[in-house]
Image 1 (cartoon, rainbow, N blue to C red):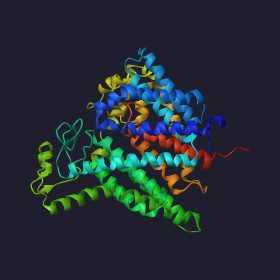
Image 2 (cartoon, helix red, strand yellow):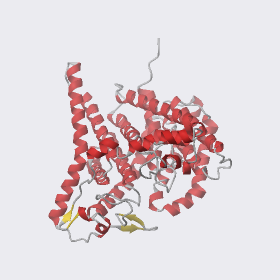
Image 3 (spheres, rainbow, N blue to C red):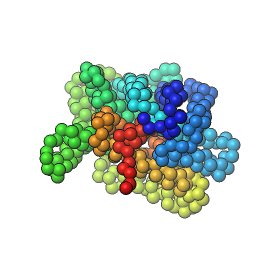
Image 4 (cartoon, rainbow, N blue to C red):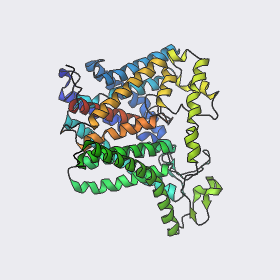
Length: 477
């Protein structure tokens, strides 16, 4: 077991820490269901629990730990200092942002403090609860999307389905818990990754039947979120899985031939997975039209009339892929807007900016109004300046190195289940290069962090623990 210090491995303390960490991750799943009630709970019990958890952890662990943990802790401290430098001396404006960073930096080392059995148990509980939650969410979202209806879920009447035309609605997509498809797609993607881990993790093979069923539902839900950044993340994961299986199953003596076969399999899996999302939507449309459904499509009134057919529904993507590739869905312009924005306010490089004012400068140089910089590293740069950017970049590089070591480890303990934990981390990092999801405020304004980011840091700690145990760095002679 890898621990920060031997005397910190007190069983009762680390298990209590793991329980509180898992409970807080699951607590944030309540936010989309009842945002106002969740906000009230967070304002009282939530903040208290996060600060208490951080106090208990830092009282015993202080600022020690592996390099990745220390970098995240230093980033949190630096973000706090930049709030003061930006005149928020009493944290009247961005206290919640600081608390969200504190929570993330406390979640990360939890996996490192636990032994292998405790890590598996913690993941089993979190995956069982969140997997069931997102399975129900996926079913409700698919029903509303495919049948073109919308409905409201008590107690706060949060909507499933399209009930307005705010986003222009150029194609049919899932709306789950009244959030954007780019956010809900990551929920289903993480649940998809959970099922892959559970498939390899479960000892009773009969459990693999419902796991595969849930995996298909999540795959279909991802397809109907029509979020190409998540399509890419899942496709890369499919390629990674083919590499893992290829290294285990391909028995060819010549190393170059074995490598070539595995590479071809990985490329085939990547393309097949990406195209599968389009094929699933097309197949669903064919089945829907053949069923002659009599349910009134109440959401069609908010759709582009050209996409609504009289005898059924078209579930295709109306966006032009060539145009998207040429301008990155207008992201290239968003990225470049950071340069003149920093030139206008060079102090940003030193102390960053208020989160609420982060986009004021870039908006002057963008074609359309974007809510964030669509890249977690650039977002960190604009929020916390160059020091924060370098800390996060260093963490990202070190994490990827540890993931690669674990992924290719030949240690008997590096099972397929353990190696599959690198999938959601790689996917979030890919998604983060096109959206914002970690180290800054969540794009879902109902909370400044959410399950996507919290699950990332929880699993990152587990992966780091396994990596240091099963693929330790080689000592220099």
